[in-house]
Image (cartoon, rainbow, N blue to C red; front, side, top):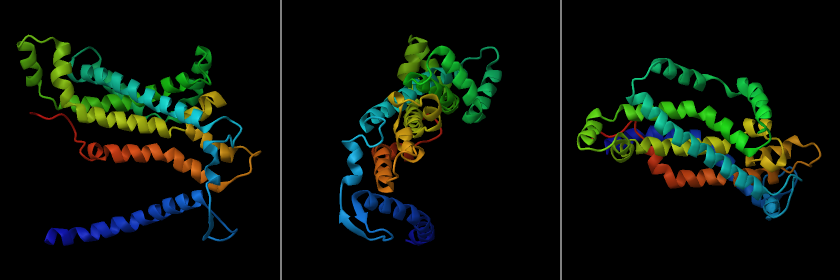
Length: 275
């Protein structure tokens, strides 16, 4: 009972800090489905007019559903590439003693520390040379490459906590190194893989600079650039309630992902189990 009372100040502080965000999102939701008189904060009528982008092209850059599909492809492909590559690369860095291993590890963390914006001109020139500029696959490759250092370091940390005895026992029982990795080691690092998959997907979903600069055409646009177009295009009359509706539509998958995987996100620990 005493511990419950001790936690009350913390709960009260977190409630006060969270309240402005909750009120902001509540106003955004209300404004997206209502109209109000100019200068008034009180809604005067209920309407779905601000959600017309779902069935009508409001920007002149194509349907929002095309942008949504592109965003799912972009985020999903980025997460898949990062997870698949990080799983094998991190295992090699954790278990194999190959030449220049320490130099490679230092290089990976240095690459992760580099700001993306400082590389944008070089990336732009490379994509033009390869013929991948203004294509979705080009942006996916760039985003995955920039996320890989983080993914490799995360998975290496999980592999490092898996005891060698597990692998040695599997090899002594006649299993191949690949089977030992797949059957014995991989289940131990599953929490790290789940976390990396979720965070890589969310990172791709929220990416704005790379699609804006490297895929400016309407065929490869994602939801972040679709949303920004409402403010960047001077030919469009700014409808802030419409802008808020698109923003809610853009945030909805992130909210659903959090609700579906919140237990996994809350139970992430720093490595594999020793069982």
